[in-house]
Length: 284
Image (tube, rainbow, N blue to C red):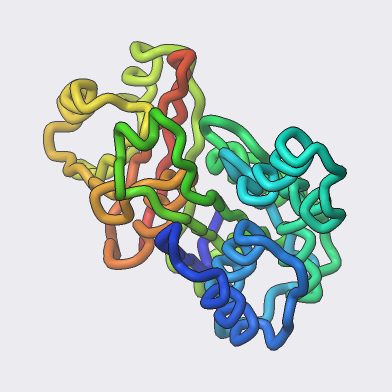
């Protein structure tokens, strides 16, 4: 899959929502009524990714997320269980995270499938796999794949990241065509345990000095065994640069396409069951 556009949009969780409303209005020329922060983050990131070009009307949209529409889900649950009342219609409708993907397609005048894929781990990687399938079988010529999450102040996240939690919206505009591409997503592979993942990494056809990036599931103590496979590799600490959101993997992968010309990234991620994904991205 060839990369023709990228975007990484980060917002502090206490930023006024009116700033996002204004940003989306400037990007689209449209005013969206009764939308929430998740929808606005999705719209702003997607339009930033395709800025300066008119997307092909057949561009598929795949929005990935770990937590979905947190703000309206919390509001709706509060109305049901604390206020003992029926939820307001627009709060209830906006709990459906696929509303954001629909608004993206509508605002870009796309005539194509749009879908939201939610997963606790590997959400962005699975979204890229879905796009790759549609591109390879000719169901789409272009795909817009993004990872979007609001900052979620769960106890585990608060203890680990503290005030470094952010809202994140990161996007890739992909195509089957290499002409004018800035890079490519070459491989996305899955493994069931550490040994098979390390073996798979060792057998990959890569430059002598790839850049390694580790997802949130890879403990710091595990970094050394990956670096030992290719001693010339460097480590990209994208969480140190972008801090943390549920879509931090999307931010790290998309952000690699800015300022890493001529380099290849190997992004390694792990879920709670010990499964791995390895993704390779090359910047031209």
